[in-house]
Length: 460
Image (cartoon, rainbow, N blue to C red; front, top):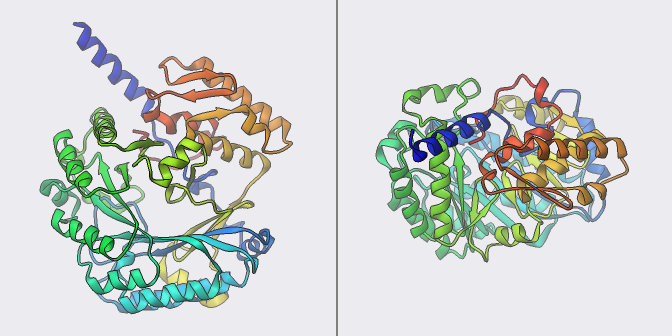
């Protein structure tokens, strides 16, 4: 075997050993550990306990699409009629009003995010209704960011006008891949031209920030096809690019079984797609953020990453300074200092819950002292690629938990045989070689994972 062949074999072995199935760590404890022991009254109490000066972030879920994308891992409902959307909106407005009465009167909303599904499916009139309901129930900070996930397919001028009037400041446009064969394989046919029209339409209406979401690891996707997509993406000059690995989890999302598994890249191919795509984006002026985001140097996300103030929540990486994330709508998750809450996933049950009590909480988890510290450690790792003893020491007086975490950090350093970790005076830092496996490193601090029966996507 030549040296080159030996190096390839060694790298492939490294990938296979470390590309284990682990959570994405947009929360800790992760969603499979939520349970019905956290009730509506618990959530109402948590909201009322927030300090008067709290900063809030609102996530509103619109779980409707008019076509089913087979790759999708979100909570969605396909409809060809608008009546179910309008009925759902009525319940969402009621929930917004109910939650607004529970938060401190001086709290300010620093961020609003409409996700889905396809929130751009809302009619222009209902876009205004939802925006007005939010302003009526909450006090918005002057610099409040209002972001929305956009499906360019079928997007019209009237909806863009309505969003602009509602105060939209950032759009997140789903692209996935522009190659026709890949699009056919995931049932999402979307041309570059209609994507560009959406970009230009929002910019013409004063939207100051734009990011594009792309995927690697899709069926029939190759490095060449991914690069072709990214060339078209950077031509649109987005401020941020999110490059997510396709999570093939048909045991959770049954519609993914419609994807031809034999056409999916294996873990070795996924690794090379991700790393070469990252090199492509950084060569075009984007800075690498965490595991799957890229931002221009002047973008607030890149600035926050350099400053060590980047955060992570259920939408991924964020610069939102909020003290609490309030989830509104079916399946939405809220994150508060006391713990997590989640609404019912089924739209019918969600509507019933709102109609019967305003607050729709179905399950959640209350954070223990240990959970709070481990959450902080995992978030710091996922955002800054570091474990810091001093940062851990500033979080509380829970000496036994802190001691256990420091012991685990020393074990991670001692057991590293792949060059993923470099020891520092204050702990350790994950290297660029280790970055693709950051979720695997973070999983070492997950006290629930060994007993967790949930199945996860691979870490690459």
